[in-house]
Amino acid sequence: MHHKPQGECWAITDRAAGNQRQALALAECLELPVRHLVLSLRAPWSWLSPRLLPGGRLALPASQRNTFAPPWPTVAIGCGRSAALLTRMLRSLTDGHCHTVQVLDPRIDPEHWDTVIAPRHDGLIGANVLNPLGSLNPVDDKWLADGRESSPALGDLPSPRVGVLIGGPRTGIRIDADYAHRLAEHLLARQRREGGSLLMLTSRRTPNAVTNVMRKAMRGIPGLLWRSSDDGPNPYPGVLGWADHLVVTPDSVNMLSEACAVGCAVHTFVPDVLPPKLARFHDSLRVAGLLHDVDDDAPLQQMPLRETQAIAEALRERIFRRTDLSVGT
Image (cartoon, rainbow, N blue to C red; front, side, top):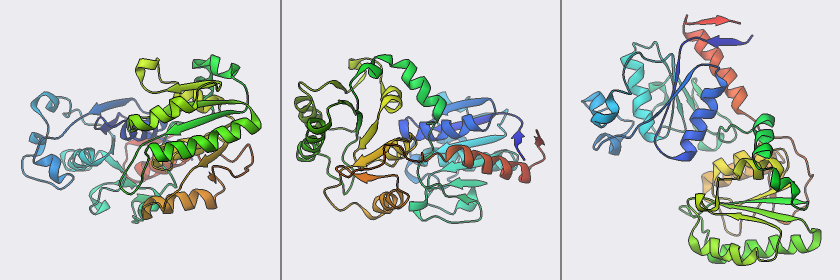
């Protein structure tokens, strides 16, 4: 039965785009009015979050305290470590009337929240923990159709259109000029065989050396290389909407999850051993038939990984069971 909670939902995040996308994607699925609070903690709270320290709302700069104030929401969804302190505080500030949700492993006992949503590769389990395979995101058929509509010119590029999503280095992962040269060789060899175009997007974390290699590689190849808002609006939804297949660097759970939500083949280039947690995530995508090596043949269409709606449904059920604020619709 579809239960719809009443009241307002707060999505609480810092400025990190990945945290905002996850919290807002889930909040939108709950069918409640959504208020997005972008809040930052002061020291020493920021150092120790989500551990509680005396002082409560003094954790927020004075300019933000009026935002984090009654009337309190029915549901609060936090994503990221600083949000975790605020969602934890809301539980006591509202005497348990606000259903508190924390996305990503808060690194302390999940019992401090009503619901914790942590991807399977984090290995966090508990009675109140939901474990999607990937990260929550807004990608579905409507989102992809809107993306195509927002970037119609991409549809005129020659097929196959290969979307290339480039992240950046993380602990234990080298994404440098050498990596970029090797990835570019694979992409250009395939383009020589199949024709088509390359729709390449870098991220905030992409080193300039990588972008420079890719810019040279793209010379004479149909397509685009988008680096920042200096190149115009970010065509990311359009690239995902128009891509015949996708190639994604291995460093970002969010980018890989969103690519796997599209429904076309997704490839990655992994020259080195991945850190254990990320390796577990890659393995689970490969076992599910969702992720392939850069040169492997793969079916053009695959079952999209779309978990946000199911997680929202499970969350609605949990809210309904725990409170009398809901009505069946």
